[in-house]
Image 1 (cartoon, rainbow, N blue to C red):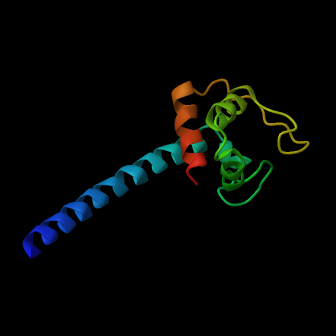
Image 2 (image 1 turned 135 degrees about the horizontal axis):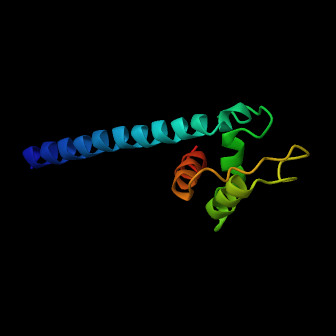
Amino acid sequence: MKRYLITLLGSIGVTLATLNPVAAADAAKAEALLKKYNCTQCHGIDKKILGPAYKDVAKKYKGQKDGAALLAKNVKAGSKGVWGQVPMPPNDKVSDAEIKEMVAYILAL
């Protein structure tokens, strides 16, 4: 029994250890996309610059059934009045797949 538990706990530890690098790689990729498309000039992770902080965006859209789709639409087409007077310009050169990655990262914060 003791041997079984040690094996089981070891397997769980290995599984958790392998999940973490994947999540870190996904986060690094999303952060690179946010920089590539100049999103970081107006948004910080935990501080407002011109636009809201990503963590505030995550809070606003988390739990909404269509939150990810709405956020992706706002990123692609731009928005006005969602977070105040300053409009967000459209990002129509960003692919839908890249927007999906960025939105998933933001909502996971």
